Length: 441
Ligand code: LLP
Image (cartoon, rainbow, N blue to C red; front, side):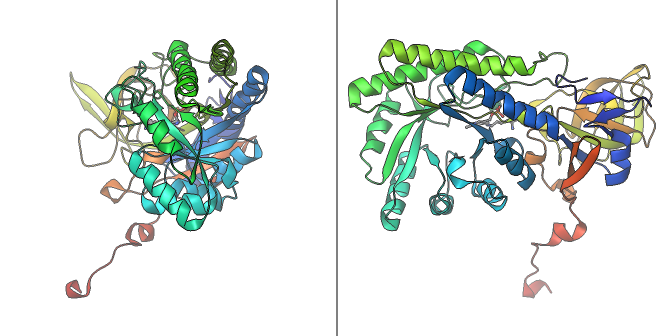
């Protein structure tokens, strides 16, 4: 059913993921449940790594953008596949390090890292920190001076590429909060600024144009602009960047409105980036930079499925049918945030004909708490297990305890086995950090 063939319909007409019957998973672990397919994740990590080897002589690194899904198990997988990781907060860094992930293979992001986070990153020995403001360069330099160390850094550059995706996930438009613009000259100014910092070692530049992008051309234009920028800085400032981090952003299949990409297509994106940077560098007479990419969504997105139990089914005659599930915006806020679309299936009725269009509603106290609108489904009764596909990226990672609901458990499936990688929260977890001051007692 998906491009990596890890989702199937089994002989009982049930959805199967990683060799596990989805209905059985729901029964065994309860719902809502995030299910992650290990084989899928590994295959995607390998695809990028191999493409970098084949198309760029391996002179680079794949950094898994762990904001897409961060937990100890995923860093273990990334480590065992020999790739690095991108983290964007002290929390992600802590999770990676506590899973034994090597600090020197971590790239630290964030447009406003706190002093504590910078301190933690330097103390941990992260490989590279992407600087995104003068204030940060000042703070980091002062911190390193105090500690008597030097820190490798990249500067976040805004190459000015308006990728075709949701406005909230575009990150290289002229008005972006991220980076320094090549067009208005601040990228060059910032380069000179960082080069003047005695405790920062400028390695090169980073850009990330946005997320859920399919047009190869957008990535190619960004790569061209960044390589040109390296040449310009060499000519005008005498600094030749040794590293270029080109970000992530490759799109995935959610519904039939999206292309279905095979591994070879993702390898193709990377090849286009590698070829662009190599050719351009040669033409401009600069050394080929060490190339980093940061895919997140495309590694874990389609590897994930969320399982729910259907509750009330409410038909509003002439208007719509709501199927309420035991999850909602607290474990998948993407419809509420971006009107995201999903494919929804009835895990135990995969061969039943779809006879209705329904809206999948969550259990939170607001009308915008929707998981998916207008999805084709067979007849659904309360108790049926519904599976929402392609929920591996930015679902768990954006989950909250809204309405004091539990963040669900996550299981990792492989060859018919399922292991819990994130435990479901308990009532006790929900009040763990609550404090009742003496005067209220
Ligand atoms: N590198 C940087 C610096 C990023 O900001 C991001 C994503 C990535 C890499 C990974 O991009 P990916 O390959 O996953 O597209 N919450 C939104 C997505 C926000 C993406 C943020 N940055 C969503 O649910 O669609």
